[in-house]
Each structure stands twice: as structure tokens, then as C-alpha cells.
Length: 213
Ligand code: TMP
Image (tube, rainbow, N blue to C red):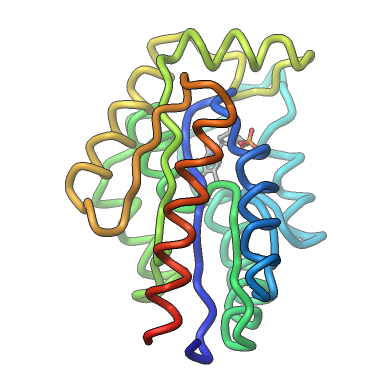
């Protein structure tokens, strides 16, 4: 296996089971002898987690979309430069619950920020660094929202209307269809075991690719 770690992100609308799949994926990689870092966005370091709290807290004050966008990238800059890049450089694999695809989907599709503006910040914060693989767990918005509601209190994003999440889902699917080598879309409506099986199969492909690198 080459010295470089792999950066794999998990994406999807609310309630598609990302966190469960991420934990399973970490176990699969670890059983193959890979050192894995599991993290999330916004967040992943103490400072980025503080920014996450600012972003997710429901509040009476209207949040300007540029404020939201900059806070997402501020958290990402801290997370990327202090945790993700050092881990990858040390040969560790990083599994991340959401990354910049979520910004294109939520701030772009959801809030209507232009793709161009998001791409400018992506370049500023990441240079040409992009995830090696994106696993998109896809389900109709109502299915995911019903699961999210069962989890209890809804955060500032989860309180949005169904149409907001429909736009987000459409952006995710569009991005995936444009770069099929980087994205794998998995139907998250299937029984949990089938979803896990498909994620595991994909990880085995990625591991064997990395071995021949
Ligand atoms: P989570 O519920 O999956 O932990 O994600 C937190 C929320 O943050 C979720 O509603 C999606 C949102 N989000 C964005 O709006 N833009 C982003 O770039 C990221 C990473 C998350």
C-alpha cells in the first residue's frame, strides 16, 4: 500500500444513515489493517466544533447566507489543515461525515449561493485537494426526514422545508452523475444490511486499488 492515506467522505440529505455506515466502514478498514481517522463536518477539531455549534443552533436572528457559507469554510480550513491533511500525510485513511459536497448541496442548492462563489472558497481553502471517494447515500427526502424527526430536537438545517432538501438531493445527484469515478450513489432505502454490504464492497475495491498503487 502506498504511503498516502485515502480521503473518503459520506454525504446525503438528513436521516439517510451516514453515521451508521461510517462506523461500519471504519471497522471494515481497520480489520484490513488500515489506520483510520473518523471525523465530521462542520467540526472535527475543538475550534471547528465550536463553529458547528454556532451554525446548527436554531436562532431568532436570520442568518445571512454569506455568513453561513464563510463559517462552513472557516470550520473546514481549521479541520483540513490541522487534522485531515496531517493524517493523510502520515498514511492514515480519513473517513469524513460530510465535506465540501455538502456546501454545494446545502448552501448552493438549498440557499441559492452560486456555484462559482463556492468554487472560489473551495480553491482558497483546499487548493486542489478533493476527496478520493464520495459515498452518497440517497433516499427520498420524506424518508430521511421522518428518521431525523425521530431523533428528537431538530437543528437549524433540519427545521427547513421539504423543498429545501429536494434541492439539496438534486445537487448531490447531479454532482455524482458528472463524476462517476469519484462518486458512488447507494440507495439508502434498502435494508440496513444491504446498504452496509454495498459500502463494504466499494471499500474492498478501494483497498485493492490502494494495494496496487
Ligand atoms: P449532520 O447533521 O450531518 O451532522 O450535518 C450538520 C448539518 O450541517 C447538516 O444539516 C448539513 C449542514 N451542512 C451544510 O449546510 N454545509 C456544509 O458544508 C456541511 C459540511 C454541513
